[in-house]
Image 1 (cartoon, rainbow, N blue to C red):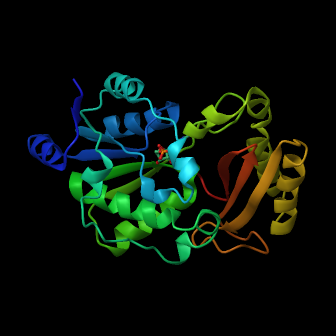
Image 2 (spheres, rainbow, N blue to C red; image 1 turned 90 degrees about the vertical axis):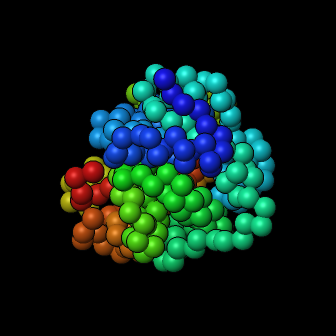
Length: 281
Ligand code: AMP
């Protein structure tokens, strides 16, 4: 039986009686197979699995994006139940940010480029809410998707710098059979945009193949991604990056582990994806 809790106090009381270690899976709901993979990993590695479902207003830099973010609590709870989740925390905005709340967790260099540059304030919102969740749940381990690669780096930095005891575990991106990374935002794609959407992964894998074949010029790899995306007229590139996998500094040549990442609009829907070069992941 999954316990569904809404207040900080209910969560604190329930956790006090639960076996350790605790695994945390923070989500914004509209759960899909990507979230399920995180829950399964947590289920396999920890004694108590806590999923949080909270569409965090502070990480949306665009009010329209926040209000149209998809929500379906009963479907989400059925998924958590099916995955054997012990506790779902489903707080109101005021439960996470009580009256008078006035603190912001801001991460430096690793939060600056890419998503940080394209979505001002986004990572402040992410880091702040994840710091609250880490404090409330006190989990030994927390599971995040590599689909949001920069988010994993930002949260790792935060947990390390603030000496938070929760270990950050990155998990592989789950994809549709045609390569499209699962995302709650995919629901907004029109049939034509959905048909075009696998071009993101096609472009990234073509560049990774070129890298495997010896291409080391970052501009060539970025150019290859852009060229393939351009074959779909409905796709508008926001950025294509080939960056150092540890610092996210843009590269001239790929000499060590690199993150090849992109943000692309299909109509009004913004999708992100990435692949790693030169690492096992
Ligand atoms: P969200 O609900 O979009 O905030 O995502 C919650 C968690 O699920 C984050 O750690 C995401 O990185 C992760 N996630 C989202 N989509 C995927 C996916 N396709 N594969 C793996 N993890 C994912």
